[in-house]
Image 1 (tube, rainbow, N blue to C red):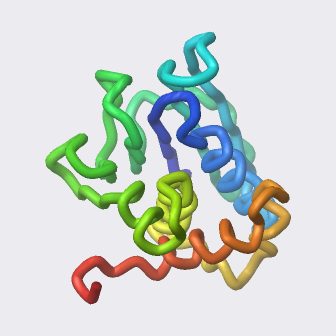
Image 2 (cartoon, rainbow, N blue to C red):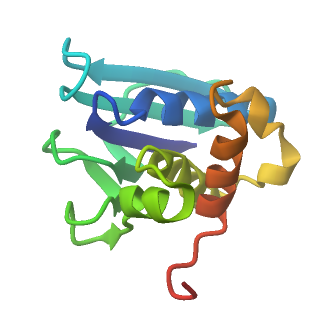
Length: 160
């Protein structure tokens, strides 16, 4: 069983990232649970997605300590994970400038979130060739989103 948390603020696509990951994992035959904790504010309020997936049914969707935490904003304190991946300036673990990469490679910071999804898919050992990524992503800007997910999946900052 793998446990993942995605943390950020409203407007950063935390729900899109976690929902797309859940749909992709379901396509691959995994059992998946996905819960959200968020403020009532539409933009700027904290949001955390808690996702578990396994080859067997999941009894309890609660997560105390995740295998991976993807942190897009520093709004939620106290989240615990074995591995933390953060947008620049948010932690001392693995930092990746997702927003900056979105601007540099796709012209808009929002694509940094799809780059983050691609990197997360790589981290959980999901082969993106084995499912239909388009079925997991919103229809708006789908071609650009697919390219951004692929860029995150292939991300190697040391070669750039």
